[in-house]
Image (cartoon, rainbow over all chains, first blue to last red; front, side, top):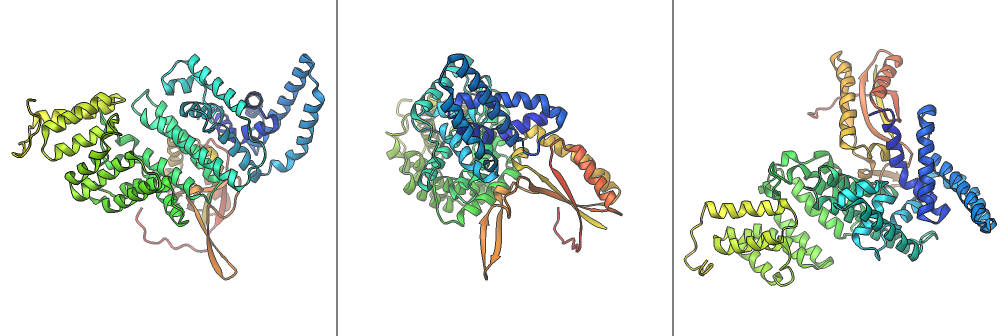
Length: 427
Length: 124
């Protein structure tokens, strides 16, 4: 690490706390951002000389607040607004500062900051962009790269998101238990979206997507530190860690997707798995299951199997059934079909997913799984058709590459067609 | 005398390290560890998973309860520890200083003598 790297790290990790407090003081994302920016500039100037402050976040809040007040004073002189109300308001808040700097009170500040970026009225892409900008402090350029769009377009997207947030009103009152639960759920969704953006773009520009996954994990740990007894937040953090633990095994050297059962389990990240398993064990003790916990528990069963043959498919099937009850969706059923195919064979799984055809006809994984099951049944021609539908729906090169491999297998080793098959007439 | 060297730091900082930064710190620390291991002074070395994975069992009023997270909510968390055989406190502090120099972040090393030591039989 270079001499200034430790300062950057301290600024990054203090950011949610400092921004959360500054948002409470200034009641505007833009003002809070400017104040934080100013505090960071002074930190970069002072900290190399003075050494790191004992509590970097408190330092940044204090300096940011003062520079923000200065700015409001200057602006109000220039624009001749009635400054008194505004300033006395800030003056009152000053007295709160001392006790507010005591750790536990930051919780609602940070939650508010995260919640502002998780407004369900914002489309997913705006939530992600806003959170990465406001909470994580990524530059517009970095975010634009992650989304494969131009910088100007991303700038516009973030500006639009901020305007919507301001119009919706930022909730400043201290939340009661119900509000807090609602905010937590919205924030969990937003963190999941950030992760998913990175996860699904994993074969995109080098490093950027993995950074989004790391950032989502960091945010989930932050949330868990604030709310250490929330089993769904444990489930969320565990789920993200487990998914990300397989990052190095998910693609082969040519960039094609490697299915879970074919992955080199030596490449899985053990420390991440250890952390996640501990979290899921803790969550289960609460006996308050939720979608994140169940998905994490499924991922945990894969992580616990040192070889694919040791996977507890029966338990996975049961967990998917529980998930179907909590969150019925054809995609969940599709996933359960994989477990069913392992337990009862491809025929049973195929029967299970056929009724989903209408709703999932535009879904890559539906046709991919269907092709795989048909291939297992020796119905090469039907399988080829399904794979061809899948490849047309692939959203990235890695998916397409995987399907192409499947098609190559079919072509290279033509399987004996069962005699009863009416497979592909005239193909 | 055996000393425990307990490593404390702000977890929100260390978990913000990128993989490259983390790898680099671990590599630099292992150089220090090797130096003491070669002179036969270094015992077990442990790094702990973040406290978000921790649970605490407390005994109070005749019953035990399990709490999520570490015992105390503090700014710095226990992140790992070493056992080291040193002739004096100064020598143990030298070891802590070597670790501290290899580790760019702030944080602290608590040096504390052991009252009892059973090595156990766990393989590494």
